Image (cartoon, rainbow over all chains, first blue to last red; front, side):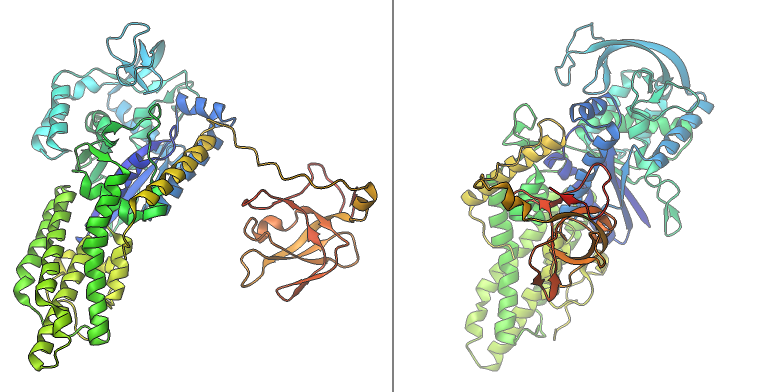
Length: 487
Length: 152
């Protein structure tokens, strides 16, 4: 079965930073986790490359918009490669194939009577790409504080107002369409407050997708950017199943309205299938401050990856931040988490277990199991499945780490280093038991953490002598006692 | 697996890298111009005769392949207007692919004493510019010029 998920496509007006990495890392984790559940998971990300801001930024850089966006899009791709993220499709809004899908969406909506030509005058924030409702000339943009500009133009409009009832019905009949709950409530009250029609083309922008036969109109960001999720997989199937509709759009909370209101309305108007779910996560703050260019406190993922490794960053983001809420990043917290949970916790258990098997049993896993730990291992497996399915990653990791400390305590109580010095049969049998138990727990723990810590899990897995590639492990076939002795 | 990390040096290292990446991204976004290369220290003055001793020729790369076991070395045949093409081995394989080199006009030091590099005798040197820690960039011409022409 397919599971198709997307990150937002990132606006090339800013270079990649940890906020982009956060969403994309979580998407990669989900792709791996869904794969472990037996899905054929496919992940799309990409770059949003049109609009007046990009035109201006390119001009400042002394480049054509095409040259400029080529460089920035490549930089995003490079970042994801460096972090080892499994991206299936990197879709650029400047690709010709994307333009065809955008035009097709427009044509379908127009044929169904949801598009009309009108004239629009409004106060417009060119930075945020939006008209500011109820603003007077000169008023600042409520989102970014920059002064708005008065603009009048002939536009194509989308009849968003016609979709109020159908959208409310959607949120009602599919309660998990928008998650978490706080975001869902915000969207419902926004839609209940009434919807105004949406201007979907511009005549004052050159750098955009032209509307066929309607020059000088080009598509404005809504029809262009959101459609990426569909165009990236247009006509593509896995195991005979069409990838569209998406099973999940993973987004940041600042773009909920576009994804949960505009996008399903466009698809309803076009008669196309809707995405199954939208999950909006919170912001990553820097030492409890909002990261911003003006504060000069933007953190990039590259230095962290180079000094501490991609897995350290992944673990921190997933364990420290309650997914869905705002979270705080600081270097101190990153290193604190790393030392307590990875160096002392998982790293210590792995190196201790593997060293003892090496020293006392010549590197061969002995037979014999303390089945007393089976219930707790099963509990961890179930907890990971349940919590990850609900996007509660930190809770799932807590359950795994509870198992790690149990096994740590067990090793300390059993004192295998003492058993190893005693030659009698009982001590040696007990030692076999302790070693097998520790190794088997480590195997299950490693499989469970593998979507979060793919690089490290692959290494521990190989050191345990497991033949099956860790990517092929399925969570439902993971059972206590699965570690074959003698390897 | 997961060695302990000392907070202070690690944070300093990450902050230093952060500054470097931020500066690189600012150049990429066109917000600041690319930094100029630090000026190379000036060399002592020489009379023109010393310079004339160096036989610099325009050449064209006929073939290029990487030297096995040496990441940096490229083994090339370069036509500099003589009866036989020159064999030249140069440390440019990290900066250029063989496809980028073939048919490209380059500048060759034609009277350098032959030198053996990884078992291949290199008979001449290719002229390139570089900054400390950067990749070499080959010298070339904006207008067309026949192979064998001398630089002076």
